[in-house]
Length: 163
Image (cartoon, rainbow, N blue to C red; front, side, top):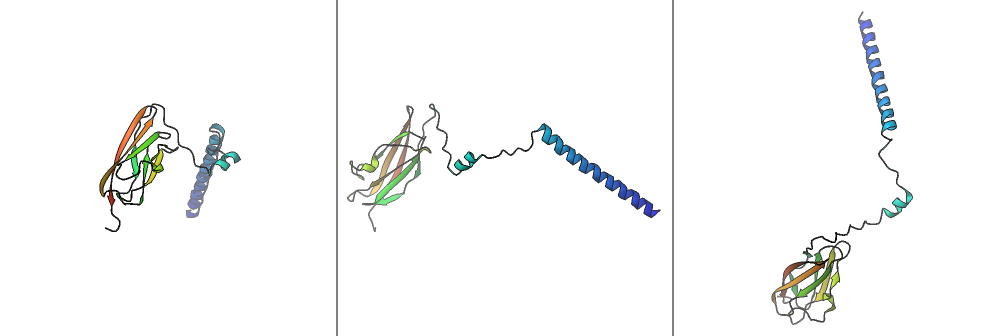
């Protein structure tokens, strides 16, 4: 009798497993028929060829607000050395920089107006006068995008080398 109960239980388990497997197969068939198969889209060769190229960011709209932020600038620089500053703004903004005239020659080509790149980055580098006065100095970056203007001020120190 115990053997009969075991056989009946095994038969029930087997039948249950068969029903579960049937439901899984039926569910997969319904998914393929009604939902169009897998959600993965095959990648064409043309897409694969360009996937290694970085995507250009979207250009800001013509009515986008203009803002400027200093991304990188040293806190201090020695007389006679090169100083650089990197700013972030809207892509293709027209930007100018004004540096304390006691620090840099008016004719330094590193201070020419620039246009921000596709990522909104703009940078300048210039040589600090070898006879520049030491102390706190100021620079201003002004960018314009479709008639809107943004401005940021940067503070830095000019120091004597080896002091």
